[in-house]
Image (cartoon, rainbow over all chains, first blue to last red):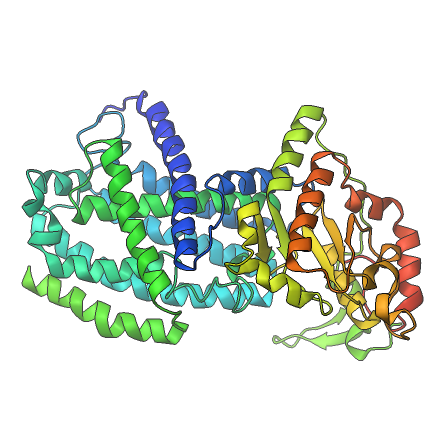
Length: 301
Length: 215
């Protein structure tokens, strides 16, 4: 296999675009959520300022090596996810390092950051962090089940584990999207999507009003800034997976921006309409609604 | 001081049967005193950071007196402080603005000091209401502090009893000006005059059962 070195700067370009898009879209969604509460909400550039401020804080303290590595793992989870996917279908510049089995790697990377966070938050020694991360892991693992099943279903349907091939199979019109060829799998995956977007009703483990803020309780200054950067990258990376698997991928950046925005909006929309679940309620929700749908989708295929 | 049993040096038996000594104040806390932290070496970088800091004020969600009730409306549609880059954080690690909202009893002062010391440099303090300036209506109370400035470095006072949320919003705008001008160096002031602040704090807090500096 020959490696093209030019792909590396192109991959950096992808990350750069996605970071900026993530910041702006995150703030826009926040504003839309605020409008639902009849507020104006934060300025659209607020996330940039928060990140600059946090990088600019003069002091920071550490609780050990894993405490350092927690945010680093989290960020590498987001960036890794992004780099091993074909972000723009058919584009040489933005196909990044995708390869034949990238779907499996993506499934792993979705979980990677959460695990790193668990180790880092555990080392901070704060009881809120430990409880928060336990509850978070519980819920994310549960949400992952329907998603994994939906992914198997899609892999069976198209007989491939390559995302590029899956996107290619969905080209040529709306009716070819997985959304219409395998709606049950998409339904299961969208439930899982809600569960892992860290928005209500599934965000009790990081909610400031509950156990104060959960896993990142002890994180501050540049640690927190790293995690905020990841909060811009990771949702976009994850939505790009969903877009590639279920919604026909994107042939250009504008198409990607629009699709990602509407997918993100879906979770925000559900979030402003429904109150929070407790963790055991959300686990039950995924077991009762998500998992049977996932099994059904595999059986139908 | 040092009378509480959970803070005394003691032998503990671990789950594997091994006995070891625990000195809570030394093992569970870091007692290193605060140091003065200069800003960025290049002035323009520091100005840039100060500008970002002024536009992103994260308030510690800690209400001490009746003024706490004046902060809540700021989150609601009527006042909506988020428009001005003001947000609330539930943990002192992430917050950089501490609003002492009204009278401060000596019992709460202890918690306020711990919370303040856990915040990261640069950090700002706003005294809300007359009670933080001269004791206000609690001027002759036996267990509230009268001048907040003697215990924590205050950057800005908002006078009134109680100031309305609009006054707080105006106060945030003033605070932003102070930060942008590079004059909000309370954390360094605290580090420079650490002995003086500690002496003042210990004069009113009689059951001092924590290390002198909580990181």
